[in-house]
Image 1 (spheres, rainbow, N blue to C red):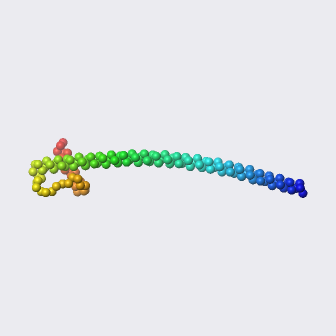
Image 2 (cartoon, rainbow, N blue to C red; image 1 turned 135 degrees about the horizontal axis):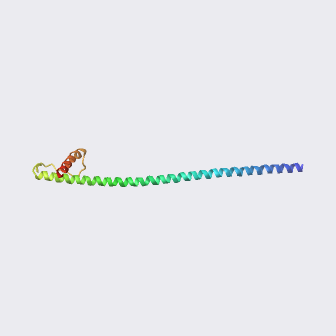
Image 3 (cartoon, one colour; image 1 turned 60 degrees about the horizontal axis):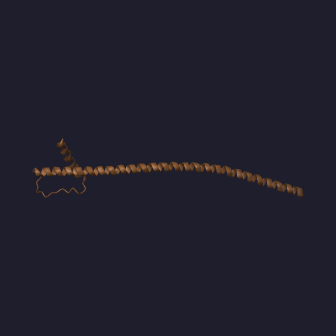
Length: 131
């Protein structure tokens, strides 16, 4: 019996060793799969970081462009106001606008659509007079 008992123990140990070997092989295969997945995800993160950087750069460029457009618009409005004030002064001096009407134009207030519509032709006519 002792010989069969020893064979049982040896057989049992061999089974455990084979199970351990297969478990180690399985774990190595899973490790390789996980490393490949990590590499793929790292690549995705790098691509997204590059895309985010590109979008942030584009956003900065658009912000700068918007600020330049706002500045140009402000300067253009200022020039139109100056030309309109000059035209009003010329008309007033020539007697076409009565000095005692009491109506004064406030150039510091925000212009409405009606103001914009009426002031643009006046500036256009001034431009045509200069040419």
